[in-house]
Length: 89
Image (tube, rainbow, N blue to C red; front, side):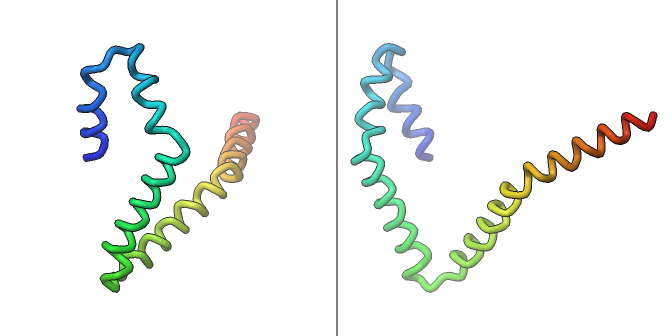
C-alpha cells in the first residue's frame, strides 16, 4: 500500500527531479518521525489490545536472526563438502 502511494507520487516526475523530491523524505528528522509513527501504530494495534502476536513477532524475528547469523558457517560447510566430493571423483 505504501509502495503504491510512493509510486503514484513519483510516476509523473522526470528522472532529474527525483533526487530533489526524495532528499527531504530521507532526512534524519523525517526518518525519525516515520519510525515513531510506525512504532505508535504497532503499539496501538498489538500491545494495547493485549494481543499474542508480538510474542509471535519476537519468535519469528529470533528465528530469522539466528538463521542469518548461522548462514555464513553453513555456506562454508557446504562449500567444503562440495570440494571434498569433487576431489573424490
